[in-house]
Length: 208
Image 1 (tube, rainbow, N blue to C red):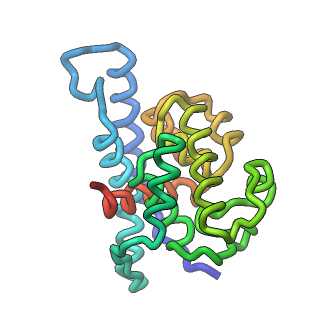
Image 2 (tube, helix red, strand yellow):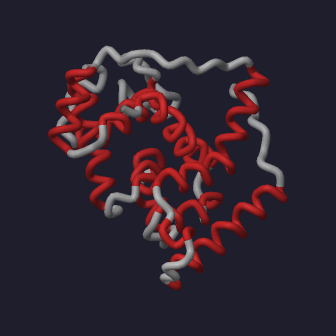
């Protein structure tokens, strides 16, 4: 049984939600004079870290959990899948790192398997006959991630939320951008909320 992670304080959540609401309104108004009207991915990542990343970092310090940067053993497979499906290499590595810590034999409590933690139904639909085979897992997982990126017009956090929780849950939010997703993040499962933050922090380790 996992230890409960510390909650974000109510005041912090309220301030964060208010900030996102203000940014969303400015973005919708198309005010060219506002820097918030054109938030890039790094700015969105920073906002997300403030809401969730700091919470995870505090938990890691308390629990003694240590995350270390390490090279991958699947460079050729990752590079190939990146070129084939148009998904950035650093994003692929971050997903694998977060999903399985590069352990091809891991099975989650929910039954997800392999490097990219594919559920049996998803694996079958992707033509993955052996989810523990690194080549099949990476190819299938990256293909599935590319589907989500196309579905959500390149909005990476939306695609990641769909990869983790399923597109149905993301679609129910009625949002169309990463900024809108972050403003409604509390409506997603806590695992998914933390998942997006973990991906962003893992991705920094593999940025070229």
